[in-house]
Image 1 (cartoon, rainbow, N blue to C red):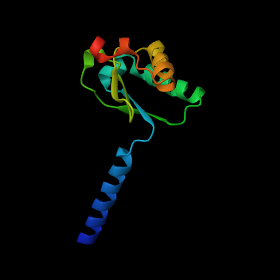
Image 2: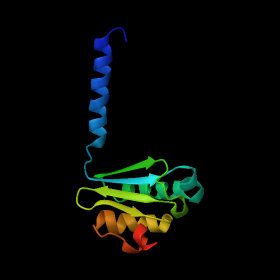
Image 3: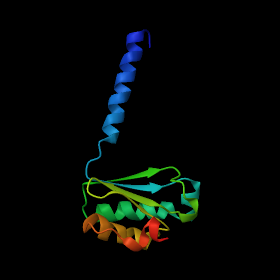
Length: 120
């Protein structure tokens, strides 16, 4: 960076990149992968979700990790974001429940009520 114009260009490019990240297309599945989530089994949950999405040929879903979601006692936590249903938060997820989320929520569009944060 040699000038004020260089700094302005960096700023503009950063804002453009932030906008691209915030433009959600399809569905996004977020798995909490802070130390509390990992200790509770979030790595296996994440791997299961990625595997299920891939094996079922689902292409309009993005699976991502995040840090602490904020309710450590309910880890592993999986959040599903979609334009249709907004944010859905699932708690105390294991690999079988992760498969259930993919089958029922992602493929069939039905929220898995018994796994919701409100029901735990």
